[in-house]
Amino acid sequence: MRRVEGKNILITGASKGLGRQLALDFAREGAAAISLVARHGDQLYKVREEIRDISPRTRVLAMPADLRHSKAVERVTAATLAEFQGRLDVLVNNASALGPSPMPYLLDYPLEEFRRVLDTNLIAPFLLARKLLPAMLEHGGSMINVTSDAGVTGYPGWGAYGISKFGLEGLSQTWASELEGTGIRVNWVDPGNMNTDMHRAAEPGEDPSQWADPATVTDVFLYLASDESAAVSGHRFKAQEDWRPRALESDLAEREA
Ligand SMILES: NC(=O)c1ccc[n+]([C@@H]2O[C@H](COP(=O)([O-])OP(=O)(O)OC[C@H]3O[C@@H](n4cnc5c(N)ncnc54)[C@H](OP(=O)(O)O)[C@@H]3O)[C@@H](O)[C@H]2O)c1
Image 1 (spheres, rainbow, N blue to C red):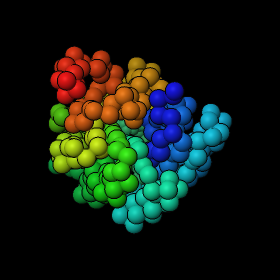
Image 2: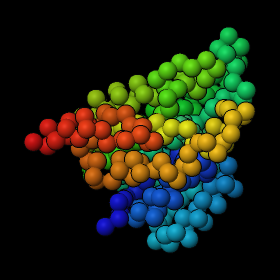
Image 3: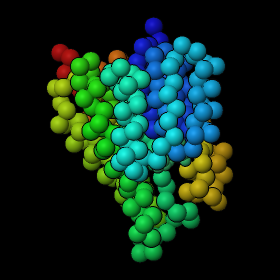
């Protein structure tokens, strides 16, 4: 049995970087249907082709949309639910904007850019969840929000991006508490430094080869999307560290006892 056999999954920011890799790995692990969202259709359609090569039986919906706009969120969620016949198993809120590069300090941060980052990284995941959670209630489901170490430490220059991730961590914790006992689990993952467009824009002076290939960080996402994590909610994971700490294991053992 593959890890996400038969599951219906929506991934935002699926055109490149981590989101693309998650789409490919979910397809390889047996997803029944995957809904891919990002602004640029050309890149998204390429990912759809890659999935078709890996797993011809996986149904793929590729939807170019700018998630900063609530109307786009409505369009994406309606089309996904129609394609998935009303059942969603996994929502991955991965799409993110970094903001201006080089990254300005807060005193110099342009207000419009600040709003744009928060709309993408915080408001869109909130709206997507509100629209999609009802489709998870009957069979249970998993929401996975992608955070960052800039979401727990206020690094200079990481401005709106870091603040949006602080917000996403709060949103994730609150969803997890409010959804306790519903069968919907909510967890959030810091993937760590990866060699992607975003990180290259954030630290243009650094050597990107020192950062992880997104293909090496997806195991925890497969775990959280699979039934193996059915009893796990309200946890923060670090994809590049030992993400099954003894504390989590014993916490789970206690809950299962
Ligand atoms: N890279 C790292 O080192 C690192 C470290 C910690 C956390 N993270 C987190 O990991 C996740 C993936 O990052 P990544 O490095 O893979 O980034 P990336 O390569 O820049 O990919 C970002 C994705 O989000 C999409 N996106 C951006 N704005 C959007 C919008 N308004 N509407 C819809 N889609 C939008 C992009 O596609 P379009 O441009 O076509 O819209 C793209 O598919 C993010 O949540 C990021 O914060 C990354």
